[in-house]
Image (cartoon, rainbow, N blue to C red; front, top):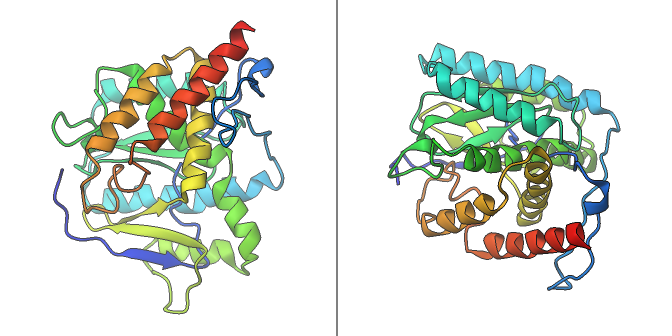
Length: 285
């Protein structure tokens, strides 16, 4: 695993700064609820889209995602310098977003030339892939496999389309939320009295904050990502093998690594197997 300086997990209050991630709309409404559950605790039901105050997410994207890109440029970290890979990422994004839970978000994706092993999506659909995630030794994704790329991108998009950041903001009911988020985005940071609205991990190498979601939210994004992949025609079995691989690489102490920022005890792959089996049964019934 790539060795970074130890990152501090920053608890930010009025900040949705860098809550990064994805979703989709199933191509077949008959898959929205599946019978034949193997585990009564695991329900393969697709959530309905929540479009309430969607302009909030879009405004956050404009005030945070764009500033993060500016910070990367100011740090002389190359963006989109691999034109072939960038074209593939955009092609996969085009396929996924038409099947997304909220297909009309202003999605965009950029490739950051940095060894960070992660991919993230901000509210509103701003996506970053870091080259480290494609590294043959330390990374997670086979760069030649579009199905694996789609699996990660779909999962990250789901955090945005399921609107995990907006739901947290609703609960917090924070005044001046966007202004604080923007200040964090440009490096102003948060005060010592910041509340627990978001748990973020700071990446020293890039100067960015990465989000940390609850296990429930990660599980929700896994399932929504699965629906998206299937609707877009990608191989959902690759999603399972991808997270099985992640479980074997989750020893890193880097809190901004994809291996530590996602549940990687093997349970997510097992849950996805159940979901996929349920979906296949529903499709053939």
